Amino acid sequence: MSENCSSSQLKCHYGLIASHLTSKTHSNPGSKFFKCPKPKINSCGYWKWEDEVFSDTPLTEVRELVVALDAIKVEMDNLRKEVTKLEAISQSQVIKVSTLEDKAKKMWMIIMVSLALFVGVITAPRMK
Image (cartoon, rainbow, N blue to C red; front, top):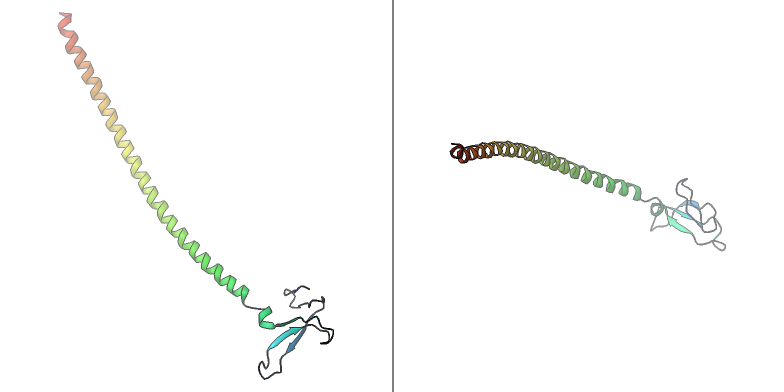
């Protein structure tokens, strides 16, 4: 009932190893096929062309996987470029934050000095 392609032996619907034959007809000369090993009268009717059984499906799958792998490589390259851009932006932001922190410290110092001068100006005349 099942086909077992891994050992290159196929089984008919009776579970028998299918006969591997070569066509001698005018329409398909030399074509290989599998059929039930029992005579036509007792046959289960199993019959397949060899190229139907052993198609290039694995080769097609490998080609599709190679294409998918190439697409993944392109995507990885794009992601690496994006990471590089984001790292540059991040570094730029770190520099901006550092600059703003320095400006904030300077402003704080100016405010404190201004406050001290203001307090001095206000309290100096009262102390006399």
